[in-house]
Length: 174
Image 1 (cartoon, rainbow, N blue to C red):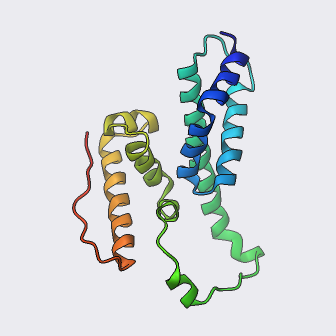
Image 2 (tube, rainbow, N blue to C red):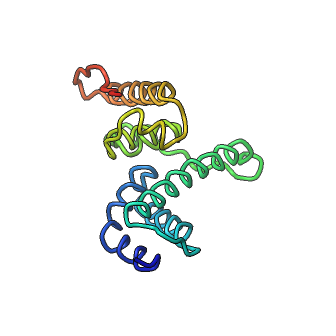
Image 3 (cartoon, helix red, strand yellow):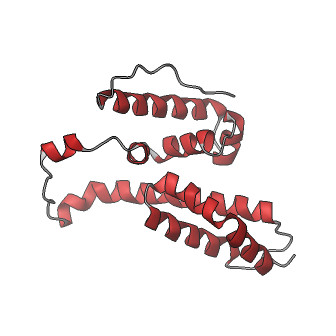
């Protein structure tokens, strides 16, 4: 199958799944759609021989993940110098913030990029720790640590919301 046919088939059959994946990583539908489009352009911007649908989807998912992690690094750098060029934004009233419900996607965005990537790959993609380690190019121990820290952070955030439910331990399988 030619690379352009693979691209067309990928968008037709797996496009919504790719957008959902990107939404989990970014937390915003509009950013997710743009991210998927950029990943598709990066993957299919130049013809590749012997690219199957499965391999193409893996390339696109990896391009999405890399873009999210790189974007987070750029944002962290920008946060360090933003105060030099940007006027402070108006602060919302504390009562408005306390009335909002906890949004898990917002909590995922509050995690570090590696932590959120590990959580999404583990619980959305249902990968094992070893598969996540291979995907991200890090050790299995680092994946376990990222998952542990992320789940502790999410648990703390949810407990602080006052929903009154007791939470048990995390499920980190190898």
